[in-house]
Image (cartoon, rainbow, N blue to C red; front, side, top):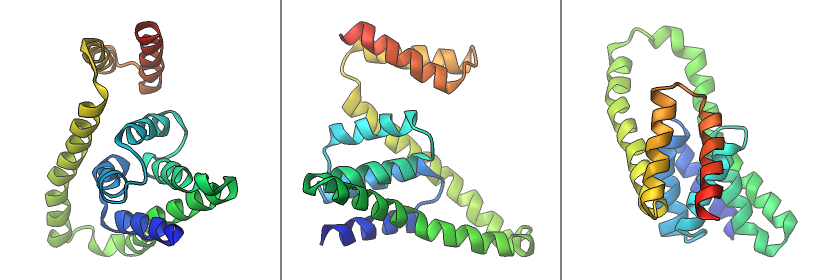
Length: 180
């Protein structure tokens, strides 16, 4: 049954994901685009864009979007149920882990073992995030205007320190001007 497959897939992603939503994106892509074929790569890229402009964490927004998209062909209520099950799956284990860590944090915050684990995870998380960037870039940058929007966005963010929401808004306007 696809509802249970959705829940299990997102429970698995939530269980092994460290580093937040961006680090989860390669797992989302592999599971929902390449293994399960629930959505296309183009829809996956659209999902990332939608998750960026809607409030909330990207992992939750993405799971909700994918669950809804996967089940909506059976009707609106199935879409809502698919969204709920996917969202529950992706947050279930992290919520339990956060509760456990919060309870025992003081006891282990000076542990060399814990510090070593987190020091080792950080570079891997950067790699996961860069993997997402590379994969999305391969499927979204269609021409030199796309590269121009990337460079312009980076300059606005780094040099002029504009707010990311403003940069997203300006990129959308640039897309309307260039591609319509």
